[in-house]
Length: 239
Image (cartoon, rainbow, N blue to C red; front, top):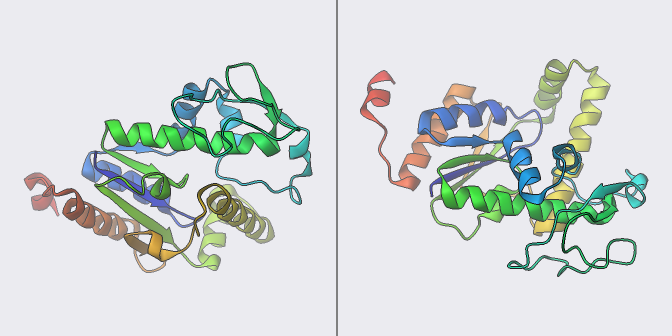
C-alpha cells in the first residue's frame, strides 16, 4: 500500500503538514491514533503506550524507570523480538501471555516493538500517512513508501513550542531538548539509526523555508510520482 512517513522534531510543524498531505492524497492519517491502535493490539492501557512513546532508556534522566511498573504487552509468538522473549533478571523471565508487568526500563523495548508492528499492520492494509515513531525505518524494506523528514532551526522550534504549549522561553527550550534526546535515543537504541541523518529519507522539508501549504504541495507532488498516481483533475484545476 502507498505510504508517506513523516519524521519530525518537536516544533517543526510536521503535524499540520501531515494533516494536509493526508487530506490532499486521500490517505488515512496516523499520529496519536497509532497509540490507541497499539494499545488495543497489545491489550495495554493507552496511557501506558503514551508514556513510553518515542523514547529510549535513560536512567540518568529517569532513574524511577527501574522500579516503576507498567503492564507488558504479550509477545507475538509468530514474530521474534529483539530480546527473543527473554528479559534480564529485573524484568519478567518470559513476556509471553497476558497479565505481566515489568519495570519501565525493560518494558520500553516491548512498547517500541508493539508500535512498530502496528505501523506494519497499517502499511499492509491501507494507504496511510504515518507520523513519527520511526516509521521510515520500520517500513525500510517496503516498496511504495515515501520517507519525509521535516526540520526547522532550533530558535523557530522553541518559539513554536512556546506559543503552542504556553511555555516560557526556558521551559520551551528544555522541552525541545528533552524531546530531541528522547527521539534520538529511541531511534538509536531500538532501530540502530541516526534519526536526523538526511540519507535515511527521500525528502527533507525545511519549515523555515516553506509555509505549510508549500510543504504539503511539495510532498504531495513527490508522493504522486513515487506512488504512480496522477493528481485528480479537480485538484489540478483548483490549484
